[in-house]
Image (cartoon, rainbow, N blue to C red; front, top):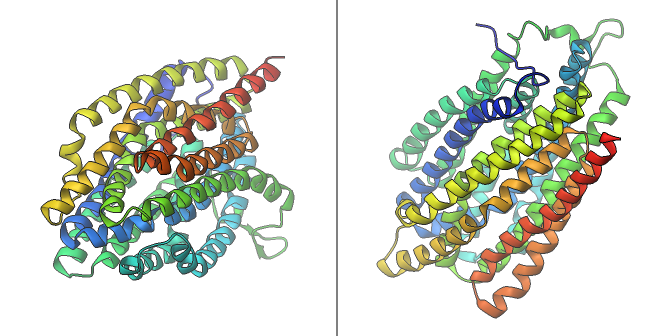
Length: 456
């Protein structure tokens, strides 16, 4: 069965955005499901120390993932614009050059991150009792970064052409596979946190293969070996440096944006580490749930990147403006619903992650719920951030979103380094909200300025 693509330059913007985002939400929920199961298996099966060890590595892992995802998403902007303009030959050229760059980026990021792992964990003040476990967990995950790049690039290509369902199916099947491998490796074979990391990578590898098979089935794209092999020169990947420069110009700022945000998160993690193991465990439990809070926001973001990118290619400025308004309304409404559910049922959900003595569990739960309540109350701020940031990126502007990442860094670190001294651990939680608000100010200003210029 051939893969279906979606032209988003015609039809109701609200319907297109919602129907594109819904499969992505389902995919993200399944992705978060195996993250949640991963955390629950580690927390319940291996204890508070193991959960804290995984949490201590979270922001560094997120930084590496963010670097890879930034490049993949940046490359897909030009793909969406080529598809929206109906330029299939140009789209194939973009894909071929994006694959070449992805290989270079994946290898480079893997080597650099492996070398940096121990110094970063040490710099973050990771407690001596868990740094060995944290480092081992990171070593396994970082070795699979080429697999992660493969999946993110393939999924980005499919989404650029309006296919949000294939990445969904890949993620659903991979989630089930991940859960099964988690239980097998950790609880049956007793591989510890290494087993949890290995299960995640194997599931991601399956997702990559699945997306590749369906990408090659898109008849209108006509992707084949000749797009990667220059017969005249007898070399793989023609040296189209102009195209590669354009792709780097889109991908690098998005990658840097994610790295800046993650560095701010690592500084925040160092403050968290100073509060002790039970605080780290509670903070980690809620951080693992953060994906559930953010999942719809990410989906709306992907939808807007594709929607705006395709309509930029078709020069449909009015449709862009209308689509952004629809997405903002959808985002705020969704955030209010999710936030309410989490506030009401948060303790029940968090209990799946936390174990230990009654005193340890109670202390970790108190930290986890206070953090969850704080984020849930301000969730609309985060959803606006994703919608507007992705809309700007779809227009080809990856610089101002990068600046917004710098604003997140300043607000998050500034608050985290000062407020906890006045009000204790709650200052760490408020730092996250301040980061979102700082980014929103930059993004909304940039969006209105850019739309005014496009309107002229």
